[in-house]
Amino acid sequence: MALFDRVSRIRAGLAKTAQQIRERLTGARDDRGDRPRPATAAAAVDRVESLEAVEEALLAADVGVAATDRILAAARADHAGTVRERVSREIVRILREVSPAPAVSTKPRIVLVVGVNGTGKTTTVGKLANLYRVRGESVLVCAADTFRAAAVEQLAVWADRAGVDFVRAGSGADPAAVAFDAATAAKSRGRDVVIVDTAGRLHTRANLMAELTKIRRVVGKAVEGAPQEVLLVLDATVGQNGLVQARQFLAASGATGLVLTKLDGTAKGGVAIAIAHEVRLPILYVGVGEGMDDLIPFDPTQYVDALFADQW
Ligand code: GDP
Image (cartoon, rainbow, N blue to C red):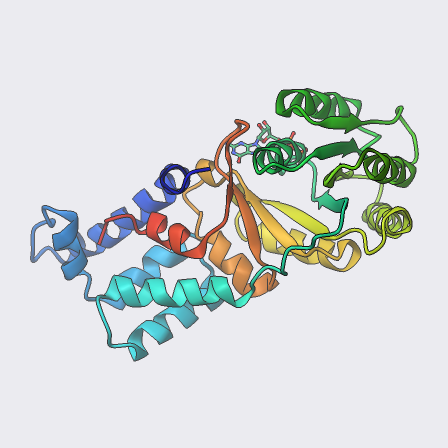
């Protein structure tokens, strides 16, 4: 995806959050009643003098208390540039503290996608398959969520649209065995990457975690060092609850990175900062819509620019 395209998509995806931030900042100024609303964005930049207004805007965007405190403390101690520049610098620093592991060259590499049902996991698998294929990789998608027939069908449609291989098993099959078969098939067909869609709900949380642990162990028997990546999908619209979900998955899934979906559907897109700050895992991709192209590789600078797009 071209850089320009990526920047405009992340801006569109964060439009609701950005608008809320702008309203909070201009609202705080208007409340003082002593000066008119700034006519231009450039004028607005110079007008944000109060870090209290910034604090309120960040909290409203779901940045969370701990990360907001850190951002404000850093902005107070930093005297270079406008308030916006100082705040942006610290946010980028938080987001960069958890940097992605270097890419592996194993072939095939196995990518497990985990998360609670409804977060956009299956959609993310489809989008990711497309993104990898566009990058020039050969992809095999595996439906290991064998309890949800609808999810398997949905994934078959995505794989077809993305033009990638698809491996499924009958209903009730052992998910770990399906993942093993997919990894073996990818090896013999010389595919570059296998993306495994896992279950997001079982009878109990313990069952679900046991299943994820088993899938991890079994794919490791098919391909050395697998899984190379475990992506935990979180829904941005659930805000801080995503943090609780993330913690529950961390131990069992061995997540290596995060995908934050539905950024386009919330004014609380600042939750990405809270998550990076608390969960200590890199955000690798963000979902900004329901279409095939609506998964964007996450870039901290682009994210912060979109969050504060020309507003203050
Ligand atoms: P799963 O149960 O976790 O596999 O979730 P699905 O992939 O079935 O997605 C649940 C719903 O969320 C579907 O209606 C998707 O179209 C929608 N969805 C997924 N990702 C995004 C996104 O980034 N933005 C928006 N607006 N909707 C999304």
